[in-house]
Amino acid sequence: MRFSVVIPLYNKAPFIELTLDCLFRQSHTDFEAIVIDDGSKDGGAQLIEARYADPRLRVIRQANAGVSAARNRGIAEATGSWVAFLDADDCWHPEYLTCLKRLIEGHPEVDMVAAKLRFIPDSPAWSPLPWAIYDPGEAAELITDLPGRWMQGIPFSTSAVCVRLERLRQMQPCFSPGESNGEDLDLWFRLGEQTPIAWMPQELMAYRAAAAGSLTSQHKALAEPPYIARMEARAHSGQLSRSASRAALKFVADQRVTLARTAYMRGEHRAAWRWLMKSGGHRFTRRWYVSLVMMAVLPSSAMRRWESWRVARATRGQAIV
Image (tube, rainbow, N blue to C red; front, top):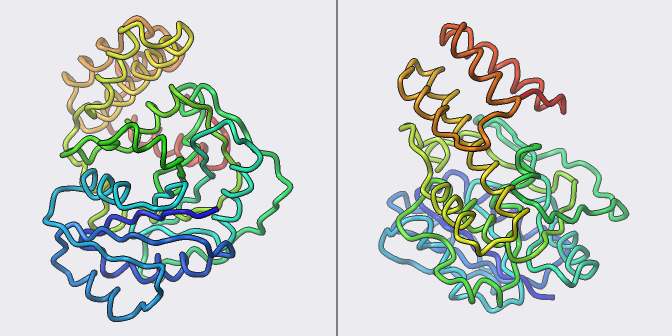
């Protein structure tokens, strides 16, 4: 089984060597690595070409067009039967592709597979080591309701996703051109509406949290990602089953509650109340009521402290709304 590994590169020269080193240590060796240099200005592409001579590696340059265009270009260039996405500042467990191969062979009915991610705060000495011991006997989870599963906790990120190339080519452009906030989630949710997802609950991908210049760290302005409105439109269009529509609308409402909380913690109280009221017909959930009460009685500073405590508990597996 051959994988095409698509790596968008934009000003990630300090990180790309570690990412590629992890890639070339994979126990499954039948893959091609396609680096799409999206107009980088820090010499990352030249660094790759000077250091690596592996025939499986291709560097393709294009004028800066954004991460969506870079990933779409990588898909267009792919020759493997499955496309695995890897961001230029993330790393894979040495058994990652082997795990994906087993998932695919064990679930031939799916067009998307994924694995659990591990968050590691960025630092000058950042390293994914030590990796957890990979257990090939651990059972996979078959996700048929991705919005519902996502609200239980983020199961994966872009660098822990692999999709059948044939399916992707049917959906091109897969990533919405010009978007860099939620453009990946947009594709995962659309895929989840069409195919079950086989997910391995082992931490086989290391995510560099808040890396300098990372796409996530750039989203300073508080705005609803465009994919949310598109998901809401699909839910109302009649294209989805009744259960899938309900799940999508509940997810949309939950994301707007998150926007309300974030706005309130920033001191943007009017915007916070607008987001809370916009959460729609699924607003009357426990999380909605908790947010309503906190926004009514707590100052922003107290809510920020509560959120820090909640996130710390959540990372230890103790879910709190």
